[in-house]
Image 1 (cartoon, rainbow, N blue to C red):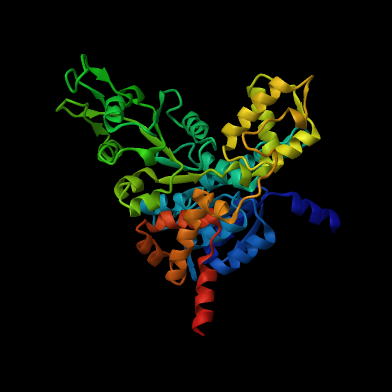
Image 2: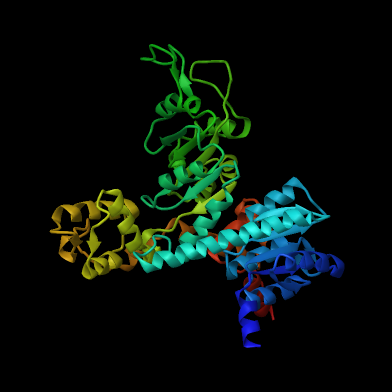
Length: 462
């Protein structure tokens, strides 16, 4: 009996959620034929309970259930374990519904009648990818630490993987120096446009005229000094990816023209009356709170909604300390010193530092340490930080308040709106002025539970 239980536990498992018994039977039998262990549920509540108990490798769920929709169930499951792929099956297929499902974290969207061979292929591939990630993580622990041990960065990796076959706009949020540019290049390299150009434009501190000239190009005589026609970076990026770094700093007068590129794939060079076509995928990044900028009329709401089809928030280095030592070794290898080791006191000092400059600061510290070291080991005294202290600085209360991350500010803003609307997501989305799908995505990312807010509100009324 014990051997049987062990064998059962070692098999990959699938949770099938379907209220129609006949349909549930058919899907479950098809998956059992693959040698999978199948757990069944017939409602959102029973699915949540089964998910907690069985911890399946994959979930296959009907869209409409007796006590709600899979789109409501999805954030609850992902709050428990965001690494489990979820497939949504429904007889009410539409492009809008598919987009909403994928934006909220669904792996894929299938319509009834279900093609069992296709479903089996999807499930098998998802299990294989998940198992490969597990083995990769286990292998990393044996040697040097993996740079992606934190749950926060694993969630980022999951989001990037889902973008592999997508061509939508992506907005990267995070503090300066967190690696948004590197992530943008990775998204490009994983996509269908990998063989095409990747063009990087930093919008911070640039004048309106310079951005327009560089981005759109200009014709001869368009302005003083324009002695010849010049191709813009949009032309250079045609067929590939345009990365607008620090898009939150782009001039308000330029924003409508960027919006036209995103929406219509068309633009005009400075000094030219002709419109030109361009085929680019837009990836943008900013350290600013764009929702606040929209509220202050510093950033166009329509542009924000167009560039934030998918939003990925990159955590600050101080919020993912379990990744720090692994990242340090990765950077040392990139600096041409793959054999250099970190002494225990050096690791301790790296972990105690606050890293206001994030990865960029870490790289600078390691470059200096390589110059000061003797032999193949970096000792604690080899480290030189940019702050007066080599450890964690004791911040005054006012300093702590002003150093909140973009994610913290946005989370508080969203939570306050949900409390004001008694946990009603649709009403909170209207209050914030953002699409409901975007709000669901933020709720998932920040681990907010509207149901608990509703329960608290009901308790207060009682």
